[in-house]
Image (cartoon, rainbow, N blue to C red; front, side):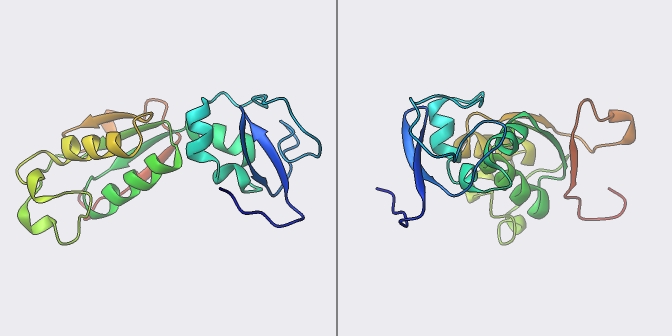
Length: 171
C-alpha cells in the first residue's frame, strides 16, 4: 500500500497506481484526471515501471530522465571498492549498459572494503564476480565485462559517461 498526502494526485502508469508529486511536460505524468493505464511515452515494461517508480516521482527524472538512464552506457574503470559500488548503484538505478574493465581477481584482503564480493568470490576475476552480482541486482542491465586494464587504445565505443574507479594514478 502506498501512503499519500491529500495534495498528491494518484495516477496509474501501465496499470500501476502510485502518488505523483510533479508533472512531466513531455508525457503528461502528474497531470490531473484519470488515465486509462497508458504508457505515457515511456519505452519500458510494467516490471520496470514498478522497479523505477520512485524515480518517476522525482521532478527532475520523471519520464525523460528515466528513459535516458535506461538508454545510457557507462564505462567503469576498475571493479574494486570504488567501481564495484558505483556499478551496483548504477545498475539499481536503471543504467541500461555497463562496460567494466579490471584485470584483477578477488583476494581475501579485498573483502573488508569491496562489499560487492563475498568469500565465495575469492580467486574469481573481479569483472566476472561483479557481472554476476549486477545480474542479481537488475537483470535488465547489459554488462560487458573486460578482464583487462582499460587503455586509450580500447576506445570509448558509444560510452556516455566514464566512471573512474581506479585506485592509482598508473591505472
